[in-house]
Image (cartoon, rainbow over all chains, first blue to last red; front, side, top):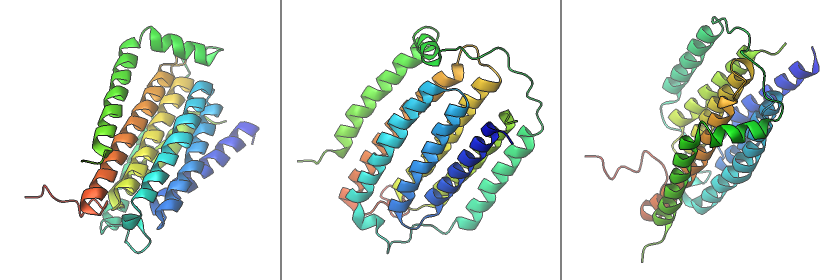
Length: 164
Length: 102
């Protein structure tokens, strides 16, 4: 087993165990903190896949911002997220069947497909290539995303503001 | 040798975990966490396909970056809604927020 395989299996274990804790933990603060190893594991997978820029953004936005935001909201809504409130509804067996069947179906399909060799090589300097891609062929998606961010900003302020 | 199918197996497992969380949690914040897991699974797929199938123009990296941005937007608006719902109804459990139920 070489180093890449070792790193992949370690990161995979981190992602799956962390994700299990996120969906299973009774205490919501534990669940939110378990998001951190899961997202860090995904960032490590991006490193293994030679996606340095996506790794940096994942660390900054997911691990840095979204987790902290979720923890803040859990603290602000303490009365509804306390340990005495049951956190799970009555759909557990049904949800197990549905998500398990979906995962098995996906595995059955994707393990059967012959994926073939890659059609080219990754550019040597990733962030530059990503920037050129974003500003030349995908500039429309880029601009629409910035509009969505603006709408989110205004919408979040309006929704969360205390009414007079 | 770690190939594309390893990453796809892992990401479908992560997606299943997120779906399980969305279906079983009562708390809106926990449902958002499940959605974040599912979005991360999709992102792993994008980046893995870029590496193993179509690496030349890093299209999957661009898609993953846009998904990360939109996930942040979605979390912000969702959490603002949660705070607003808590202020008015004193609960964030989605099975108790049923003002619009006929």
